[in-house]
Image (tube, rainbow, N blue to C red; front, side, top):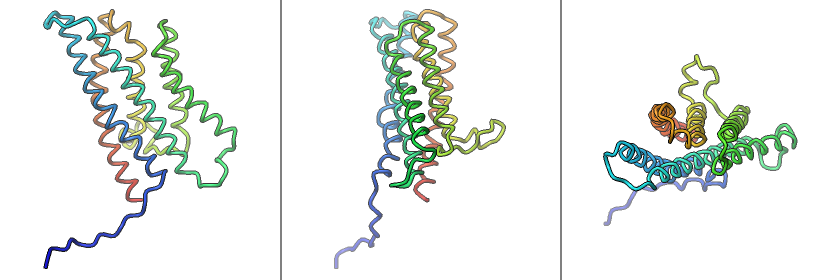
Length: 225
């Protein structure tokens, strides 16, 4: 008699909301993290070119900046997807949106501001306008994230739960990414800003690791509900 595998009960079919929940980590894993690796490698090559360690073409700094823009934009889009899921998962089908249409319109407007601010950084040339666009995008994400539907482990910096929160470490990461994108022309020409950018890059690497750990933790918790 041949080997018969154990019977496994068929899991419930995934809903559209379940797939939406997976879209955020999938986008981060398949797009953002690989581009981060390429951005770091290009950053090292930019330094080697500046110090004349390696005779590299002048296109390397441009590629480094472009990769950084894609990392920032991809992260903002992924966060907006996660925030969208947070609201949809709390609203029952066929019921009015909590707070009414006015609140829904305000949240959609804030999401649009976050995305538009990040998109504007691709085109704006004046430093003041770039700084304003980055702050608008970062602030809009914060305002949406502070809504009660968005799960945060803690909101007080003196509580350990605050530092273990996927939301807060992600929000800080986006702020650093938006700063790097907004200040890219100045970073290329000012040594002090360049050193600050390198220090921020190390912090971003730590935050990316924290995001991977806390994101997996939260997905496991979501699956067990």
